[in-house]
Image (cartoon, rainbow, N blue to C red; front, top):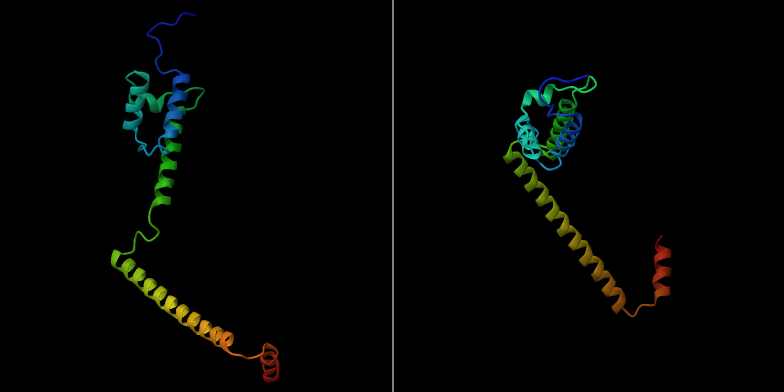
Length: 145
């Protein structure tokens, strides 16, 4: 069978390479847009592919490049959602107030901890400097309980 017309530029092998390129775009922080896909494929393969050709070409009843594009677009959206702040709808002033409250609470707890530590060190110091026998101290402790 003799084929008439010009040679096919976008073969299935090239389409699979373009699909791999599209799949790597979200990981490389390249925005997944048709303009970027066209530009990258033209740069890599040297052929002037357009968006319609890339998105509509089928092999075995499947649009390989369009499928890879939609998967990459979903990955890009999920990465953007994961990296967005948890309270993106809250106002900045509200967040700053919350941070200030947490910092003041943290400082209060640190001061309380230092106070308890100093009391315990004082008790230990009194115990170590007293000439008291440990057995007498334990007997007094058991008698009180």
